[in-house]
Image (tube, rainbow, N blue to C red; front, side, top):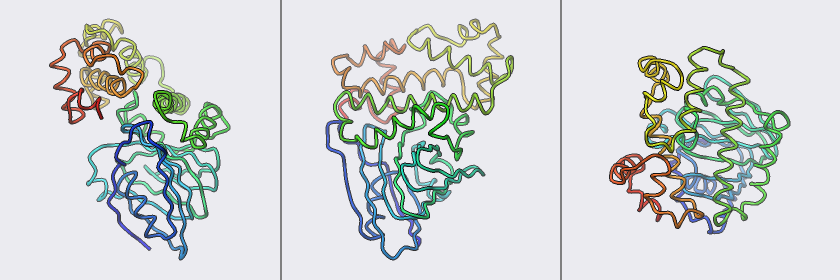
Length: 324
């Protein structure tokens, strides 16, 4: 059976809402459930009898979904990608059974404890031959402080749960799957986004292992500049000139380095500041901080300017976004 389904990220629920649970006893029911999560997908199964369950927690633009089902395939095709507007990464943690992830001419076989990332902005196939259980963490590209082209080096790459940082992160993700009910209130909100930060740390580690930039190369320089910008985001005086001076390079060389990465210095700074502001605005612990204080914390000193660019980036003013 092959079915094309129109899907979209599930509507966000507040962090104190109960975990959403649903069960399907036919493949048709399963299509309906899947259509309420993730992104547009083509789903295939030859099974006559089908059973599957979804348990999900949605926090802002971040989704944590535990999937338990009979074997089937999902495909992300160019035609379906063209119908999507926002770009997401999905991180799979295999909990039981095995799966095969294919993207960017790479193939990863996942066994319990293994992790792998894939990008919803490019075609992929995820296949499970037998019954399985997996945890999916879906988050937008801009939730990471890593460029998408860097993460692209890791798509469909098996990250073992018993080696490197996987020994720390895989058990943490397993505990998330076992305790979705605990992801409520300000603590749950923080834990969910801490998971994304841990994933970013793991990606950085994997990238350094697989392709360590040689000292003095453009890749090494860009990585150093990114770290510097992240540490100085709260300084409203942060500028290309200051960044170039801190790295003993010319402005022209600085702009060339970012141009080679298909971005700009000012665009990178703005995107990172906006992402930090977006997280803070939805953080229950920071409810009593005004929008202006949060904006200033990340280098936006002109409230009107901040409101305009926030609306452009996220589709609504910061005050409306905060109310959710």
